Length: 432
Image (cartoon, rainbow, N blue to C red):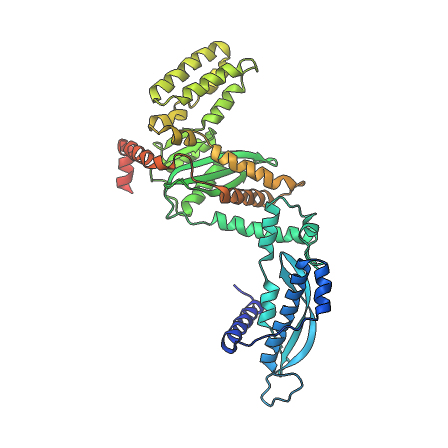
């Protein structure tokens, strides 16, 4: 709900716009050449900046004249008077620049806001400018010296920039976490977690039926547990995502993710365990001498197109690992069938490569790490969520359609056929 001073400011802006539109007054700027030459010696940019400030003053004086009449001329029906001036500021290129603003008071001694000053005072969104600059890698300590365009500019101290970023990143995080998902049609939902500054950040990313990628939500937890993941999926449900629709769920292999997805999407949900995580987990049990040959066999097995052939190759590798390293064999065996879901769905090679792992989220995490590299001290509260959310939004702007997006209709047909072939799913649909 807007406060009274905000309502008055909006009203002043509307009145100023109406005055400019109806009266269409012409303003004239008289600029001594000696001053222009002096500014030009410092560069064209200095001339443009200083002339801009002069124009602001002329526009404000014209609005004052329209409100109170000409200076030093009696006016019987006068409703307001000039009341000197005071220090103010305008926002230019992400910095506060001091200006002198004229004051006007009514005959009842009430302050009259100038619509022109409110527009100059508002300028471009300062918090948005700060957010964009910090996302490009500029630190709060060096922000002032990097963006300063006016020698007299202020509000560029580290503490002020931090406050602007907190405000902006918090608003962007809230906007992202409140996106409605009623009309979103997803062919795949990817969920992955990464350790970040001592906490686990769980991220859900959706791939629409036209191949576009969207960040759906994030959750922060001490560990990747079922409660955290369940809250994330529950939030997606509250925002309108229908888990009854057939889609592929690509997970990093954690049991908590598996349990949460089964809870919301049903036991018959098509789950693809990330092949990259599986490969990494298996190789972690082996010595450096053993890793190359096992990795080669894993890559060859997952590279096969036929589901039966890929499963046979992995089963043979499992038997070999039982003699070589039983722990690695058990790691391969755990959830082995779910690592071949993309094969069982007869996906074309290009699309299968994309949806066989959570690499799409991993690439987004790499952008988050780059964005957050200037943060040297982490605190409690929502700091991690704000920074990670901001980094994910930066990554989202760089997203392209997934490779093989033209093959998505084939995936949807396979998913639909798989769903209709399961009696328990049919019963659930009829009940709903």
